[in-house]
Length: 329
Ligand SMILES: NC(=O)c1ccc[n+]([C@@H]2O[C@H](COP(=O)([O-])OP(=O)(O)OC[C@H]3O[C@@H](n4cnc5c(N)ncnc54)[C@H](OP(=O)(O)O)[C@@H]3O)[C@@H](O)[C@H]2O)c1
Image 1 (tube, rainbow, N blue to C red):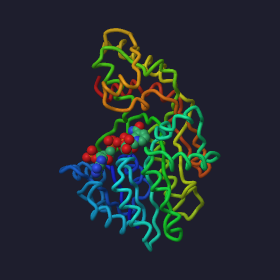
Image 2: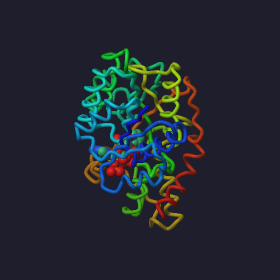
Image 3: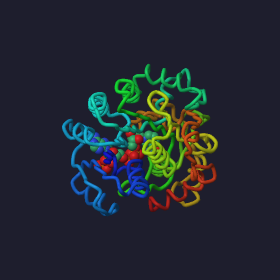
Image 4: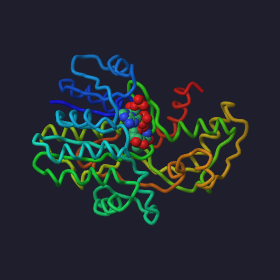
């Protein structure tokens, strides 16, 4: 039995690898890394004979192809938008004659690009047909669309699932990057600016999940697969990682601004209003990840026995201070 995992030095991939080793120490792991020296970082955390570090990138066709051919479980946690690697994985899987589980990382933000639907609260069981429709008709969801097409082309041997977290918070257990994206970036940007900001009036809602619960959902699916038990897969295998109540982006900006002010990390309590274009021009990334409606209900995971333990509201808010501590601020 062999696992091939990408992104193992990353926030999400690192957490998955950490939990995978705890749960399945007997399974051989092949972990992709792309910078010289990262193999030592991985091996320092992950002791034992069962791990082999593979030097290469998602663009290395031969490496990705061989690793996917040899693996029984493939986890792609490096990049949810890397088309070339997904295409290679698909080419291997549709022709494979060995049972394989393929798990792909995604993100709820992708659904927001369908502006017409962004007031809806998506449920990963009840709304699965609509979710598939959105993914299949949205240029930003090309990778998800390819993953969704794989299983039906090789039903006998292949099972796939897409794990779709919202904003992730918490300090990860990975070997290198332990920090998420959205909240740490807000902290950094607010400090640079000397005050907070919101997108438009900030009156938008997202949901959140702790990095531990993201990792544990991957592990739960693998556990079910290895025990030959039922789990959602193929076009139904789209799992939102959601727990607790939706947070409001204005409240989050306000909370971080107050916290930074109380620690004398910013000079005043002002909160600027940026429109999406101003934000994009200033920070070079899409504002949807810091101000949009993106609300989901994660039922699929719960129905297969996943129990989130760290993603509640109280932990979400209190974790922001832990994040500052980790960032040595
Ligand atoms: N964090 C969140 O809140 C969140 C939520 C939903 C979805 N996502 C998405 O999930 C994916 C992973 O996120 P993350 O937070 O774990 O990011 P991260 O901490 O930056 O980790 C990315 C990992 O992938 C590796 N990697 C990236 N591009 C690669 C390439 N071309 N070839 C080989 N390895 C490559 C990185 O290697 P190095 O260590 O060498 O850089 C690192 O191990 C991203 O697409 C992200 O947008 C993130």
